Amino acid sequence: MLIGGLLGDVIFFAVSGFCLYNIKDNFINWYKKRIIRIYPKVWIITIIYLLIGFYTLEKMNIIQYFIYPTYYHFIASIIILYIFYYLIIKIEVLRQNIPKLMIGTFIIQLIIYIFFYNKTYYHIDVVREPMIRFLFFEAMLLGTYFRINKEKYMNKNNKINWVILLISMLTYFISKLIFSKIESISILQITNQYILIFTLYYILKCFAGIDYKLEKMPNKLKKIIEYIAKITLEIYLVQYPIIPLLADKMPFPINWIIITGLILILATLLHISVEIITKQINNIKGKRKNETITNRSI
Image (tube, rainbow, N blue to C red; front, top):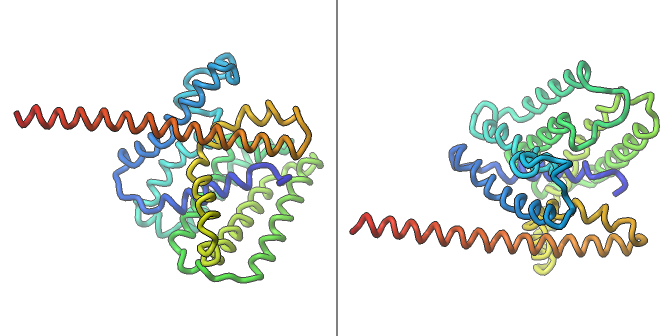
């Protein structure tokens, strides 16, 4: 979309904040489910890419690949932010003051930016920098705010919101372009993230407003969207070496079509593989549990 992937990143974290809200388990059980949801896929695709030479251990050590997977910046960020998110959801006073928490996060981010951040060049949207996690956390909080107040926004469409969204997206694009071209104003680059959060707010507001229309989509289209949603983690994990490997080998849009198709195929295979392995592990656990119960009965 000519503006990099950061817009998609913040949408991902906002949707995470919206969808994870209804937490029933204690922290250990809840966090364990998140780990089990993520790490087997990380391990499998990483081992495969190491074996075929896409990844090399000289570039990154084993801990970074398999335990704290900083190569996959989404994974590294979400694993950390899950902890803070759980505390906010479970502590009543925090959950009831999401806007204040967002303001507090902005203030902390601004203090770090003013006194410690290197502002000599434009790099605030680099996803592998720790500073980016303030933005991701703000997006999670915004998603949580919309979940708590969903009755205020759901199915309340307003044309002016779409106009504001269009203007804010154009402003975001222009701000990225300006900061990347004019080094002398890089000291102000944090405004780029504030514009992005403002844009994210109107993305959520606009699409919440047409939820009833989205629900009326044809079932076949819904199923396609639901399936892609189901394998988004796998898509994210498999795409890393595919894009740089093939992007320059053929002209656009042929390269985009082939790369996208290949990523979807590989993501599907990874999804199926993990499901099979998980099912086998659960069957083994079930058999052992039954054997334990039987032995106790005897």
